[in-house]
View 1 (tube, rainbow, N blue to C red):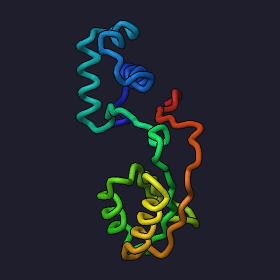
View 2: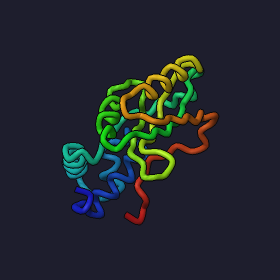
View 3: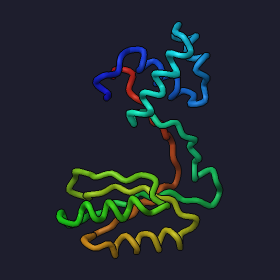
View 4: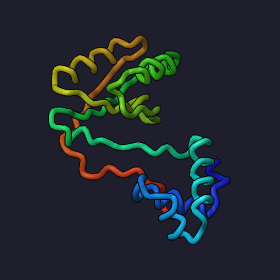
Length: 152
């Protein structure tokens, strides 16, 4: 789908990345196209799975929540099983396969306190095929930004 994006699609995405609640009318005016055109394009991008407009709640601003990165080493034949199990966990906010000598999976999760963090890390260590799990507590987030590069 991304190879089928034209300049108008990219411009609409740029506006929505700046403010996901920006009205189609306002985007249309800025881009000099009809509101219906923007609505149609956004619907197409959503249907294709390229665009999902959500509200991001920063766990660090919620007071008692902590974010942690977990580097997980998994036996190759158990990789997909581990991914499936981790995807089902509500505390996992980000899960990616990694190609590094240090880890096979990168997991970001939130916990309400150190005890909950400890319990989750130990749960991950017990997943069949997991041979190592190293956690890195996030003390402060300096930048959190999901945006397409403008040269795309």
